[in-house]
Structures are given as structure tokens and as C-alpha cells.
Length: 358
Ligand code: IPM
Ligand code: MG
Image (cartoon, rainbow, N blue to C red; front, side, top):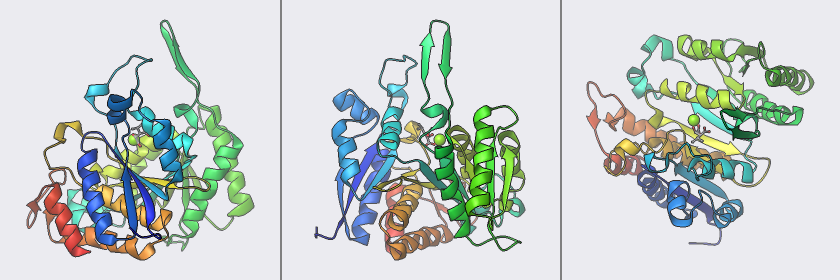
């Protein structure tokens, strides 16, 4: 390790997390310039410490240059008891504790996977979109509770929260290549026909656009309509800006456009301080420990970490190109449907192929 090495906290978590985490460590070693420290999170932390996120682990994450999280959760810790610890609290605690209000989920199906998408090739071709999800507000962090036969989860947003995530989306659109009009557009998704938070959201997004980003095209979609448009004309979207819960749902839908949830990376960023990078997929307990997990979403999350967290743009591009290259060569993990000229491989062989292609 050298003094200039970036300090990475790795949180492998649960299920397939440790397997794809170990693959990520090999990738980071091959790239050089980082020093990795591992800590438990989620179910693993509940087993060891009785809580999904300890103060020590949160402090280590805050002190790092970047955090790589693999996956949390599993049937072992599933419960509806409101007083029992849940693995997801580790992730939510990190998001809040590190101030990670902006979640970026780029969806760009690899050319080699176009036929793995559940959509027909001509629908999916040209899809290159970014979901910008608000991550520390809304119903995820509102007051919630149970009172006998009644339960509630409150949803609240402030102008400040919407403004700062709006700026992230417009800035991202400004730095993306555009479509027909030459400028990438922002599609803001809400439920303004029903929800007061959505009306505040829409008004605030309008005013950020008018005051600061007048050159960026802006449209609004209701979330139910957006869910439908996303599968009927995915290539028409550039940047999708939305609140926490809608972003959770739409990003899984958007991820599947790429053929598998096993392909999608994400970056969670705050105002300053380290970012958190994680695959969008979950802990996949059904295939854990079998050496068949797809490590590519984690590798692509490492690429986002290099780009957004460590300003190592060349390294990021190397990882992305290596992933594309192994897919071009026909290597597929079990989650990616095969076809002519493809060969099914496990986590290790996929990892080795990416390292060789770097
Ligand atoms: C995600 C996940 C999390 C979320 C869960 C694990 C709490 O689904 O990152 O999309 O709902 O935000
Ligand atoms: Mg989700």
C-alpha cells in the first residue's frame, strides 16, 4: 500500500454479496491505487453485533475515499416484527448518515446483450438513460409506525430537497449527448394528480429549470404513465428525475431492459464526502454460495466509483470496456439468457475474463 492509495471501505453484506465483493477486490487489486478494508453490514452485522450498521462502520465509511457495498438482506432476517433489526436498515442508515441524497442509476444495455432483453431488439436499441433518484427523503424516511390495527408511513419533501436533486439531474443532462434536439432532456416523474408532495416536486423542478437550466428540455410524467412508457419507448428517455419510492420501482424496471438486474450499477452521492457505490441487484439468497453470481454490476459499480468517487476517468473506461469485451466474446452468467455463440460461466471465470480484458 502506498500513501496515495485511495481508502476504500468494502461492505460485502449478505447472500451473493461476499462472492461479488471478493471479485471486486480482485478487480481493484488489478487496477492498483486503492487500499481496501472490509466491514460487515446488513444481516452479517446483525449476526455479529445485533444491529445492521454499527457506529464504527458508519465512521469508517465517512472517513473513507469511497464505499463499495454489495448487497444486504435474506430470508434469515425477514420479519414483520417492527422491533426486530432488519438488514435494509444498514443501507438506509448509511444513506442518511453519509448524506447520500442523489442516486444515479445509468441504464445502457450492452450491444452484446440486446437479445437478452425481454423487449424486442428494435425497442431497446439506442436506450441510454440515467435514473436520478432522490435517496434520503420521502416515504423512506418519514414518520412511520403501528397503532394496533393501523399502520402509517408519512411522505414529506421540502423545496430544498427537491431543488438539490433537481440540480443533479439537470447538470447530468447538460453533460450528456442529446437526442434529436441536440440536448438531453430531463423527464421528471411524479404523481401530481394525487399527491401534494408531487405538486411541490413539480413546481420546484419547474423553478430550478427556469432559474438555472433554461436550455435543458424538461417534461413531466405521472409515475404510472412513466412505468408504461419505459417499456414501450425506452430509447426516448435521457435523464429520469424522481423521488425515492418511485425511483426504487422504476429503476428495477429500467434495469431489466438491460436483460438482467445483474448488470446495473449505481452511485449514491452527497454534497461532499465519500460516495457509496453498489450494484442495483439484491442479495439473491437463492443462488448464494454457488459461485454463479454475476459480478458485472459490481464491476460497473467500481467503474462508477473510479469516475465519480476518485476522479479516475481512465480506469473507469477501462473497466467498462473490459466488461463489454467479455460480453462480446459470448461469456454469460446464468442470469443472462444465452443464445448462439454464448457460453455460461460462473463468477470466477467471468472475473478472470474481465481481468484479462482490462
Ligand atoms: C435499492 C433497494 C433498497 C431500496 C432496499 C434494499 C432498502 O431496493 O437500493 O433499490 O429500497 O432503496
Ligand atoms: Mg430497489
